[in-house]
Length: 128
Image 1: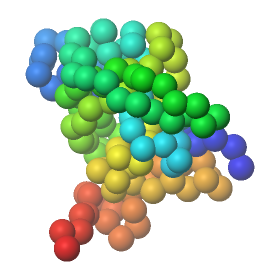
Image 2 (image 1 turned 180 degrees about the horizontal axis):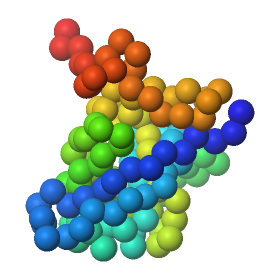
Image 3 (image 1 turned 120 degrees about the vertical axis):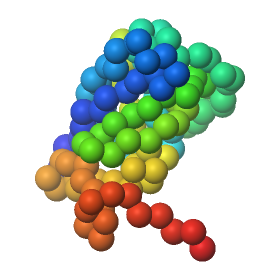
Image 4 (image 1 turned 90 degrees about the vertical axis):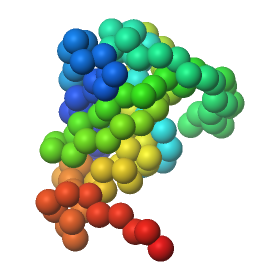
């Protein structure tokens, strides 16, 4: 099994005159947040809203900026969220918050991100 990647359209929901950007993202089910490179955030005109401490895959901790709000569209599903600001030209990373919000599942065997089979038309959420 290899890595799972997906195309996403990211946009600034506040600045309608700024064109959305298509990004090729690594889908990481071990990550929590969405991370986008600084150059993408800057092109979209997304504001930095704060900072967060993150634990990286090698168990080191680092401080990163948080930016938002932004919208992200994967397939025909869209959500609004904040993201971590990664290095310029860094690899965009989709974590569990986006997957859960869009009700998507990862099929590692076929290397695809798909709507959950129980809810193929639109996201389904539990409220209990």
